[in-house]
Length: 605
Image (cartoon, rainbow, N blue to C red; front, side, top):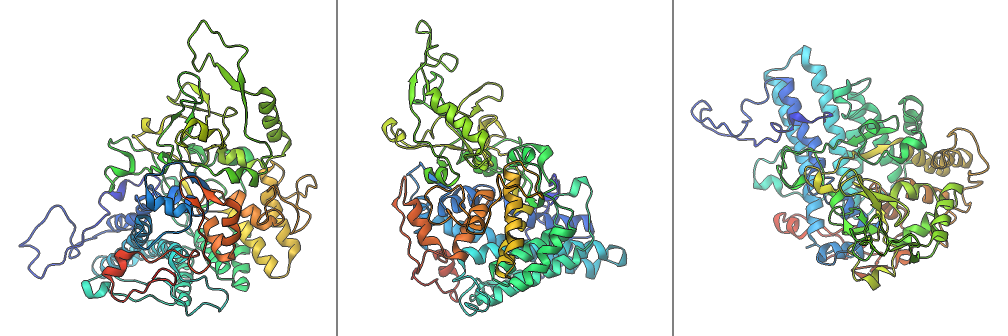
């Protein structure tokens, strides 16, 4: 919740209830629900747990972006075949026993639980210790908790709900269980699934309440990571768009655009807004983000001291690869695990037109010395390199590819924070001959490339994760106005985002980069899904690797064409898309066993 969430360690509460006199039984290792909290600082500590849960191992701490989203939407291709549940995600065929299906469910519902604990403790505090002088502060915290609970439920519903609410259609299909109180026994954990319409109505109600309770609230520099009125309204508008309630979405989106004080950051900042640069955090475009601090308290990143760790470790998975000490791409070194690389098909989507690169003998190689990074025996074909650099300069390739990815032999990274060397193909693709048939580009967005990630913490990321930013709002507004029959405004807001990507004035029409229509040609090469759909393309390119595209694929029902476009995964083979089951993840088998009232999604029985 706070910029440095120091309050987190006392915030993960083990609530203890006892029928005996509390003075006769005293434990020092837990807080009791009979006497905690006694002031607003302690209540804030309870709320911190609901924020901090986003950095748990199952969510943005480790698995959510780099495995759940990246594999399902094919942002990444997985180069590690030793984890079958992960492989199953890459071919869009997870089962109810899939460990990641279970972990995500667990992590999101734990977040719901933390919010429910807060509401329970807020009621307790106001009844026993609060007064008129603290009521406003408590209401503000309640607003934050309503937002967080809505966010957890939005993710749950989009992953596990039987179908998206389509106006009024699908309202009676199976959503996820709505739980609003702390469990007080086994019986209270037996909860049937609410209807899809009920879940979305609950999400919207939570966000409406949050926006009201947070109206006009501002924070000092030490609290700028907390939820605001505009974050609540932005997520509310997204919920309306996701459920095709265009009339409700329009005024909320316009309110955020016109009155939040937010603006698209300039391209120079945008390019580095997804790496560990403190000056870029909580910027002029960000509506809500998850704070990440490199914590050097010891241990193994997110896997160590999970109750107090402020870091994340997703960067282990999409870690950058560089050439080896001998100057060869045949013995590359990963700055972490290096289990993933940018799926080759994504390069064409960004407009990258070149074939696989070729290597030549380095005319400057000194055979009297050992091969090394400073004495390269082979180099990339200079003509290929010149073309790649020209494509960046002249805009042939979407500039956001340079934001999201690192190109072998063109870009560089550091193993030690001081000495830099060229990027190589992903180290874990396999044999040299197999690497020769893949592009294997490294991730840049959210990746650690200024040092080996093990040198931080160790295994600690440093970049904050955006949950909601203004570019997303602009594109949601464009989609809304298109469905409201105002294609002119829709096109303009698509072009605003597009202009920023090309370092043009956002609000000034520019024929050199603007789309002329909503069906204009995009940068995507030979792409039947995105090639002539600027709205789809801009949401894909602008929000690449930020955890949005999977939901767009599902709500637009373009999964089959996406599967055909990507075709295969390196470790899983052919993508197994099935419209009857692939748009929704199965309910985890663990939940089905624990909760006798739970029903499975169709196609997963």
